[in-house]
Image: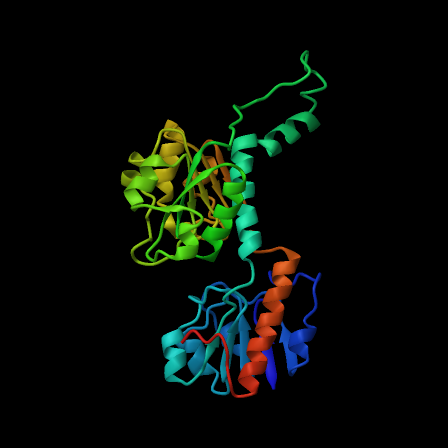
Length: 320
């Protein structure tokens, strides 16, 4: 069985092993192939039976150019880079990694909130720049610090990750509101389900953990921001397209939104003209909520399990 990994570097820059996959066939790993459609994609797949991708797109044209292709494995939960409908017509199962990083994505969401509230990074840089050495006082702060305890958080999307965030927040004495298409008993034990407009109006902190759908795209826009509390903090390590970035930049400039803490943006890598790059009080990190070594090892093992299940004739985690 020939297996080609099209863009393996993000999953494994060298600190984990491809051995689980290599045990299943002849594996060729490319660090990077393409983030847009390119003839190179089909060229690299060649006559391989299994293509493994993270963000390299597998379009109808690519699938047609690779007649020996029999299965596609995605090194992620999201699989929008694959034309799943066309793959299904060609009897090619597309397999993803549905669960691997619930706790570390929740951990990172809280880290983003705490950075906005406690400004650890800002003050670390200040001390290393010599500001404390030159200070006439035993302490100082360059921006107001915000106490988390006693506040209200609103979580939009209350699946596994949203609930994991809620458990941490409750331990920090934060009231939690949730908005979700589906209300579940385990969710009610962690939060009060409320309509979206209530959540936006009452929350001091808003977390976005909903999937990207036509209904949620551009969910955070000028109109929805206008209904929020003055000085709200917005945390997004879900999908960048949930936010109209120009509207958020304007709200940060006006002070309506006190801080935005983001690990995702609408186009990645971020474009130089993204208005959030120059917005005040905007923390941006490069889509790394998922990237702990432990989580990537789980992705590797699940992907290998997916490939093994296909070889054995009983494919698992099929999304099409």
